[in-house]
Length: 227
Image (cartoon, rainbow, N blue to C red; front, side, top):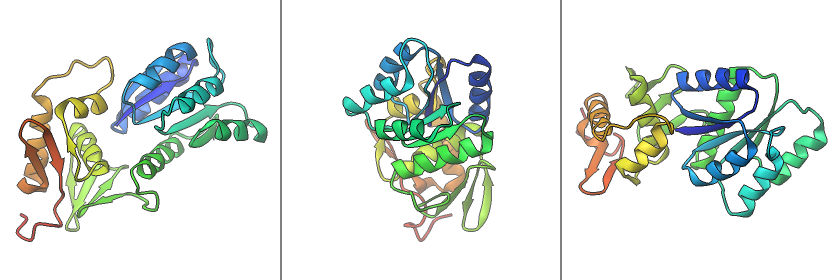
């Protein structure tokens, strides 16, 4: 999943970026509100972490403009402002959640996971549990038939995206846009390699190739002869 951090505190932004990259997210960072207004609306982010006190344009102004133009992706506000009225202003402007600084990195990651599940219709589940598989975000592993399967960082990121879009056809371009940050050079064959690795671990029928279109994740529970 690809995230955008909008935060003008460089030290905090660096720390957040490192923590979230270790958790398997692709992360872009911006410090100026004017840049964030444009990039947040035009790039295919899965979730945005937005500070309120920004140079150029405030976080509340940015959020109101995003929502006014119909941008619905989840936004989690990060701010040092702890007054209840300001939290209400943020929620009224369209924020999906609110976290006051300082906060523990684990709490942030849990809130991100919950928002992503909610955005994909799994709000009542404590973890990703899709098509016969359970994804362990903390361990970056998957449980199949009661057995824990180890994943590489790239496999984990790809499988998480597949599970959040189970049954949908996803093009290679779409997968690249959501799995890599804006600075990463993208190899046209890397998605195919990781898909094949996942098939070797989950079963050949777990991911369909739709020729000329992309891939569709099905999972394992609909196949009685699964390996």
